[in-house]
Amino acid sequence: MSDTATSKARNTGRSAKGAQASFGKDIHLRWYKDMLLMRRFEEKTGQLYTQQKFGGFCHLYIGQEAILAGLVTAMKKGDRIITAYRDHAHPLVLGTPPGEVMAELYGRSTGSSKGKGGSMHYFDKGRNFFGGHGIVGAQIAIGAGIAFADKYRGGDQVTFCFMGDGAMRQGILHETFNMAMNWKLPVVFAIENNDYAMGTSVERTSTVRELYKAGLSYNMPAAPVNAMSCQEVHQAFDEAAAHVRAGKGPFLLELKTYRYRGHSMSDPATYRTKEEVEEYKKRDPLELVHREIITNKWASEKQLEQMDNEVKAEVEEAVKFAENSPHPELEELYVDVYTQKDYPFIKED
Ligand SMILES: Cc1ncc(C[n+]2csc(CCOP(=O)(O)OP(=O)(O)O)c2C)c(N)n1
Ligand SMILES: [Mg+2]
Image (cartoon, rainbow, N blue to C red):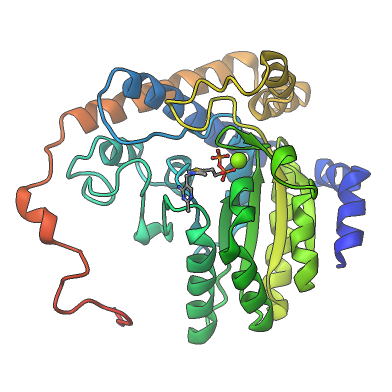
């Protein structure tokens, strides 16, 4: 599949039509439930953060949910995910109990990293989620490293390595793309292009607005994706992963998305207009999938409302679990850090 062929297919909407034909009730209900969980969890997280229930920085995934919903139905068990600091939604869709996720944000010992990762450095190795990284672009090289390790060991896993549009301006991206292509590493690079890097628009930082084109300088197949659609995201990841698993090396996807909230909880987002945000909300991925389910009579309004209420109750339980969990013991400060005598650079379990 050439990059031009791929981008043409997406631009003309052919892939979306193909997707409609093959995606039915079960996958739509799964997308809807997964997106409800991400949305309700993050809405609650925003409220709790405002009430100063936990500290540090906090970046919400609201608006971008179709990306992860579409990815989890396309990826295979054992595949790896790595991302930047907007990272609470990933463990949720990978099956980490919401209580454990909330406890991590609260810095409690029952969190996935015993409360030592927090909001920005979420990590769940058991579910192949490799964080949660605060340094813009750092995870690009780490993701390629994970892919290198898998290839070296002869596995068939794919690493899905996410980055924001802001990370495109980091030198590490170019070094990593070059190496990853040279070594045909099993990695899908996925740019979450939500138009802004903190408060700076893509327009202000580059004359190249179609970010997927960054792959072309390295002969890396690349394509833009309408990431407000679970179907299109699923199909794009499915095709990219098939390319990678066939041993052909990396694939780059530019996921066109939008965050409804500011960069972080402390950003009032005054650099964009209310109308712009409203325009994107008209294409809200939850509403799109909701409409699709109702139109096809896969569930009733009442059933979907009940699903929403169940998810809200699950999130409330998660908060209770986090608030009733203890803080880590002081000795935990010295556990699982680099100073360990047997620090495992390469350790077979
Ligand atoms: C190396 C580095 N430089 C600067 C920062 C400060 N910073 C944090 S997020 C960010 C913008 C990143 O852009 P994007 O990935 O598009 O982020 P979004 O606002 O969409 O989450 C910057 C400059 C940082 N964390 N790391
Ligand atoms: Mg961005």
